[in-house]
Length: 98
Image (cartoon, rainbow, N blue to C red; front, side, top):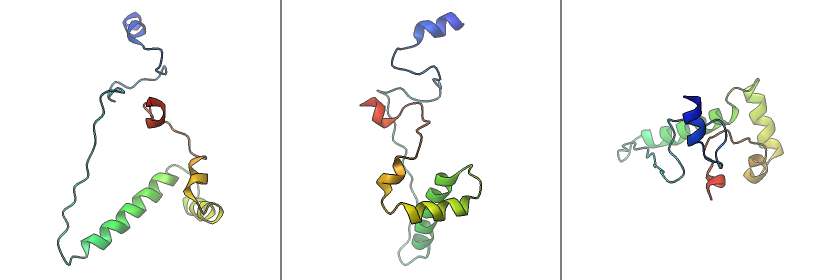
């Protein structure tokens, strides 16, 4: 089994390759569909929900999450500075596929 996996390994892959992810040439776009009715409060609530979701993902697993968010938003007015602090743990990074 290990020999077969070693034979299939490509040089441009890391040693940690999840089999549930698509390869570089097999991209799939996930689309979020949320029905919005005219004159509904749902649209405002949806925008708030998406903002909360992005903040949750930003601080996921961090101690004292609220304090971390306040510090980051005070110190980094532009998102380009924040992006330098993040570590990409995804197996197939868009920047690496190039």
